[in-house]
Length: 500
Ligand code: HEM
Image (cartoon, rainbow, N blue to C red; front, side):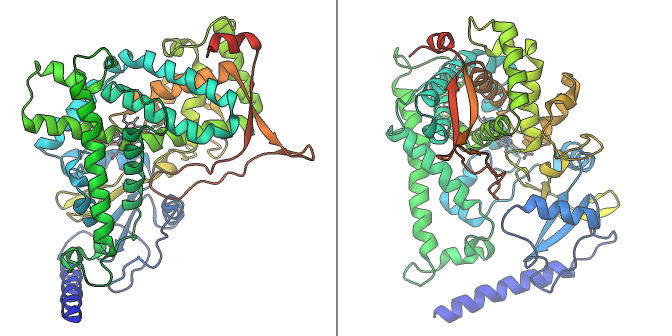
């Protein structure tokens, strides 16, 4: 029985592959490395740090590359021009998302991060885009500043806790702004479930981790069969996702009229705009939107701020220059605020350079072609996955001379130059709806930390200074490996202003 099922599944996969390669077309596919029958380029494509391999292939085959991974077409765009031409200008056919079978089984295909462009997607995306628009994000500045101050206090108290503290601070920042709920500790059960769900999403996003993503029919295998462990993992993840989606939403709903609800927040904003009347379907869309804020945002913001700390250690002169800019404005008599941004161009340049030097999502998030297209003289098949290699785009030597060097001076304090780095937030209709939120939250943290703390390298027992190696993880969201550092208060007075 088992053999019959497996043979049928494999038969279907082979038929699909044969059918796929037999498709007729006039224009050629974009160039790319030679392919093996059935495997395509799967044997040459690494599981991690894809952006480095894509950049390497770019030097051989050009800015647009075609790969085939076990029957799926993958188009890589290595330049800003091509990414913008396909994902911005042809957004009507390039704005879907590829959805793997495991995402589907776990229920993630119902959240707008993974939805195809359509009615439900537009509703959820509108909720987030409206409540996190530049005008609306302004209302959350106080939340961001309070969290930044609490973070600075905690890392000064216990520098060793910096990395978990950073993650929890940002999770709290997102929770506060989406649900009006402030978890007091890492042990908060709602927050814990949400953070575990983000980790499960990361696990599901690992290319090649689950065989069912390659052979979707495997999901129908009876559970008693060997090799169906993924179905139990899926049950676990699906239940956890449901708790993370409804738990904090119910808290918000139960506290709509309570003084414990911290305002403004995304859920209340959407609810009030609906005149206080929401259908069951609207409520589902709202709960789902609020839920995806943490999954979409937490790891990206975290990665950005770890890169900031790394570069402040590697470039103490840049740290001192940014501190001097902040001191000149505040005279060390107050803490910087998000509203100070226009007066702090160098600090903004540091943030911009962090996003350019190590974009948290180096290959962006994949888009999916809805229709066949002829693009730049090449045939782009329907159902191709399209990835913009943001890492390579941010290191284009024509736009960013000496691109591998971390150098905030390169923008000359000019906002037009800094705005080019907005591509770290992706392209077209799927570009990041949390980007204004991210800018405000990260600015609050880095300006507060620079104003109040000296970020110093670790010194070992023999008195040697230890600088961290630059070492980034290899998944969709990439972050510098945690490292040891020292954090000291810049003055007793600033410590006092920071408060308890
Ligand atoms: C430095 C921080 C961040 C970076 C660099 C970043 C980057 C990105 C990128 C590259 C994409 C994919 C865009 C594309 O498909 O072309 C994306 C999508 C998304 N981001 Fe962010 N993001 C950040 C923070 C946030 C935050 C704070 C939130 C929420 C509060 C958020 C929510 C989302 C969501 C929901 C999507 C999916 C949008 C869609 O599919 O339509 N992100 N982000």
